[in-house]
Image 1 (spheres, helix red, strand yellow):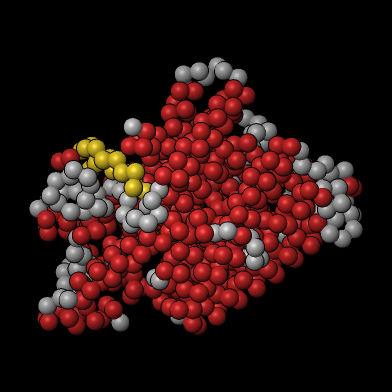
Image 2 (tube, one colour):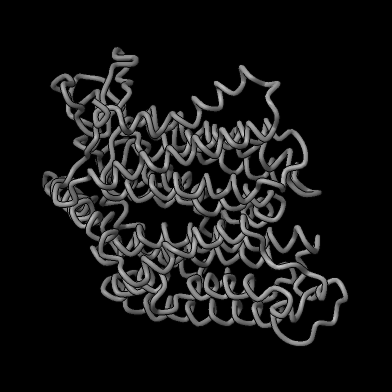
Length: 531
């Protein structure tokens, strides 16, 4: 039945379309673009079946598929979704066809390769969100790098090679440490249960061995240092922190955003950055809860630094695309605060804000790309007063900017409110500092909006600007609709998170208490970690 294969179909349909198109390389470029748009739109519609068929009252994973791959090594094809991954799967399938339609006339060379890379990238991103086997997750995590490498390296700006190499090297360093940590976790599981598996939880019909979540990971002082929670958590956190990115691992992001083509910037901000925050929620917190609690003050400090630093640096940018890029550092800092508040409000707000950021920042990058196609500059000083020749563009940009600020009635407000509520509950001082980030966001976005759209039209080129055509309006409106929907009625999204977030917190508490129940001789070491 379709339900039993739906996650696989949604994941691999884009790549299957790309591989099929390779057999018809001589087809016109327009046919390639139409086929990709049709395939990704169908993928989105199929993902809505996941949305409608998901039982929001039931914790655990649904639409699970399990098959042996390398059984002797515990490597299985194991996919499924819960409420947290469901939202990000739907976000991904929603953004990719919008990106392809938005870039319809923007790609001037190697169009077929561009189409294939976007299809390949979508499968890689979806595969990472639905993987429940850590080996499989790692494969998809690495696979995503390849198409993004080429998207920036071939169709990017003048410094695209530098930006691409920086992006690739930063991500690879963290990924290799995470791989080592996965292998250590695999070894611990094998020692404790006598069976090898990379499965996060016990698969349906699998052997008696439980999943990695049931592995008891020693605390500091209970085992050799590289087999303990602090080190393993740090290895996972470095890989995910680079991808978020959190300070001080953020320096690759502005270069990648500025040099990437519009399509690359939208996918990078909308989905790829969420791989890091999703990794914390899916793996780092439930696998190493004691270490997560111990590291929470450090992560809070880094997240708050990101919120304030990103906003202050965005405020002084002369390039509007770089301004949006630095705003991502600030917004993802908010998400990290919600995650490490480790309470229901913070986690639900963080996951919803991942979706909100993908919509709002993705829309900002698309709109910046539209004006760049007309003026071939992104310098804020080159504009001024363009609301007169482009009133529709000005209105849509204003709505998206307000959603990024967190205006009540738009999506950003809901996510930021929940994050701040969770942060105040966990650490009032962090909540106070984080609230200042909301004010700074309003300052840099409203100031940039005023300079670009209002005032006298001083540049002759700005007087001749043409407002958005039907295709561009359709692309922008497609993003504005969920921005308003989530802001006015976030219930359907939050309901799908309730059971999953509650299950995550229960898992963390169970494992944390078990670790604290160590023998008396090991109790001092446990107390030291928790302090």
